[in-house]
Amino acid sequence: MKIQLSEHFTYKKLIKFTIPTIIMMIFTSIYGVVDGIFISNCVGSDAFASVNLIMPVLMILGTIGFMVGTGGSALVSKTIGERS
Image 1 (spheres, rainbow, N blue to C red):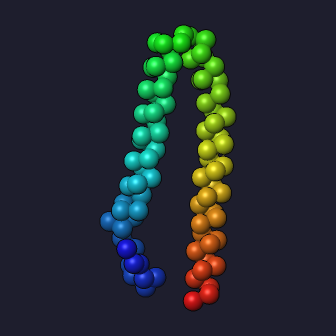
Image 2: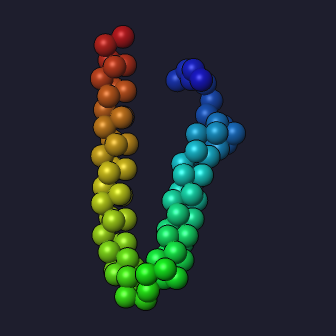
């Protein structure tokens, strides 16, 4: 999809760009719930407690990864755009 900077950015275009991210976050959350169910039923409560203790650390690392990826792609786009 080609977007011109002169085009007016509408809510429809905003939704079109944010839907993939929202879907990804929903599936990631569902993965965490299903993982917790399987761990608690198959392995036990100690393993489930350990997963719940380490999960915030994993979320922080994922957030840092998303931040670097988003910022990096913005810098790459800016650099490519400056060459044109």
